[in-house]
Length: 135
Image 1 (cartoon, one colour):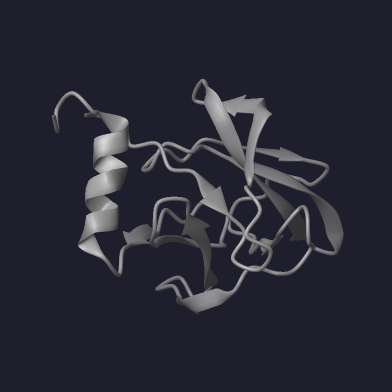
Image 2 (cartoon, rainbow, N blue to C red):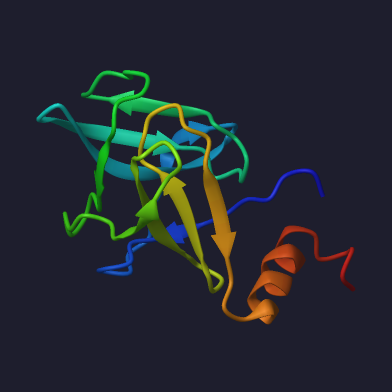
């Protein structure tokens, strides 16, 4: 299992953030409303955990800029989980199979993590990726 695909939802409205119309790494992307230097647009992230492929629409892809991230549906800002070593906010999204994914909001910083409160949820995520391995 070389790729782990994650599917996420908004922590506030719980609606899916997956967008099949915009593909990144040949899979549906994670769509986020992005605000950079007062200008609003969209940010599309790869759903492959560990991939740093992304696409900005309506805002510039400026390295080291902190991106204000919010839900494209309910428009609420995503919660800040902590501060990254690079001094930018770390935000979180809900994983569809329990747990959450956190990522740094500084464009270019590669900090991210997946956390599970229940290890059974982690097992279900891996099993969903490769059912024959866990049969």
